[in-house]
Structures are given as structure tokens and as C-alpha cells.
Image (cartoon, rainbow, N blue to C red; front, side):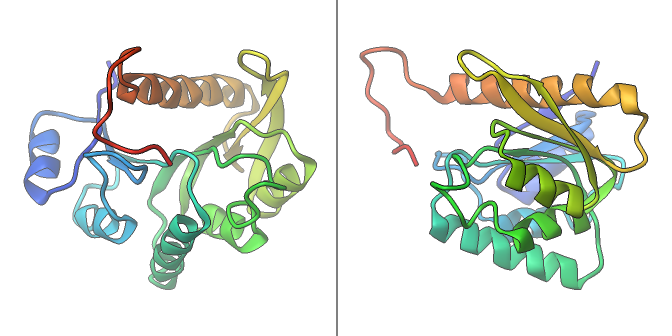
Length: 195
């Protein structure tokens, strides 16, 4: 069984997850009571063993939030350290959120990924596919969800070709489940604002 503990925001919580045998640690960058800043998440991961998967969750990030993430990506890239195992990139279509799909951001996605890292995104735009390919990912269209016909998914080069689609579905299901879990029940009010 693969265990991911999400919503970590303190060193004590990270250590408790590790002591409990977690295979993956999740850090929420989206608006939430569990939100942590990207630079704080990077600091919390500094001493985490390499085999532990790190997951970042963002939901419809604004341009200012991408600027914050971009600063952390550039800082981490300056240390020549790859530590991301899975990316789920969900920031609207490229025409609506150009900051997320910028070639430099996608380049950092590739540079900060560990060998065999997977990526998935709800968009199937050609510019995003080409940007992720340029960043080192083998990208393919995979079946979409709901009314979405196709999405993109892939792995950093070196992963067996048959493993791509299965990893993409897993990443998308995890994020979808996390987003559903954070929604208040119908008719209930929420203490957090949506992005």
C-alpha cells in the first residue's frame, strides 16, 4: 500500500508522517487552512530522504502565486537539486493563465524533477505539450474526464513507455479526490476562499 500524508506545514508534522511510514508528503499551495508557502515546503523537505515522494497541490493559481512558486523554483534550481516526483499542472488554459505555462516555468518543472517523474495536466494544448517535451518529458494525450476529451500526461525521459498512462490516471485521481474532499457540503459555508 502506498501512503501519502497531505497538508503538512510544520517540521513536527513532516517528521510524524515519516515516522508513521508515509511514502509521500503533500504540501498544499492552494488557498486552504493547510496552506504552506512554497519556500517553506522546500525548507521542510531539505532533510527528507530521497526515496520519499514530494507532492505539491495548487488549484487555479493566480499570477502572483505563480510568481512566488517561480522564485522558489529558480532558487531550488540554483542549488542543482532535483526533488519533485510528480507534477499535476492545473491552471486553466494557456490563454487564460499565461504565467503558468511560460517556457521558463516548464523548464524549471523539468530541471527540478527526479528521474522518472510523472506529470499530468487537464489541458491538451499543443504549446503546453511542446513546452513539456522541451523540458525533457515524453508527453502523450490521454483520455480526459467528464466533458474533457483529452488531457496530457507523461514522464521524464527514461521511464518505460507502458507506464505513462497508469501514472497519469493515478496523479489525476489523487488531485481530484483531494479537491473534492476540500469542498464544503452543499449548503454549507466555507472558512476558506477559493482561488
